[in-house]
Image: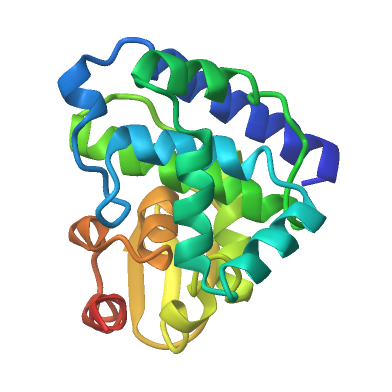
Length: 210
């Protein structure tokens, strides 16, 4: 996808997620997401931080965290979290059309909203899902490198085949599933392994667990 189309997809995915977030109850905002120990509200604040942090600010923040990405993310998440869900959502809405990012790897930032959107939707049982073209772009990016997630390491030595789109990569034991399930698995979300089939699934599952 051309860079401009990737940004347009990012903006559409942010907009769609914001609309779903507007309907959440206080209990849903406080629910645990698929992203480690973070709640739904904390994941939203993290998305706001990612859309508000340019390259030099990211470098300064990482240096201040002694290049510990978890500490960096925790600090920036707290910075962009509001006093409550309403303010946190308002801050996220304010960056929906932002093109600010820590680097020029636009598919990575599309992956940010695709993956974290599902981190929120899945445990809450929300029906929204990202566009297939957007997820396919993320799948290709994740599979080719270890950047933001260890996608290339996770899928090494297996053959990933999307059952709903053109994504097909690798050699070895086959793993079949939706493009979204493959993306979420490459992003380390074990919940999605249950949606995959094929002899390569145990390999993926063990790598994520490790």
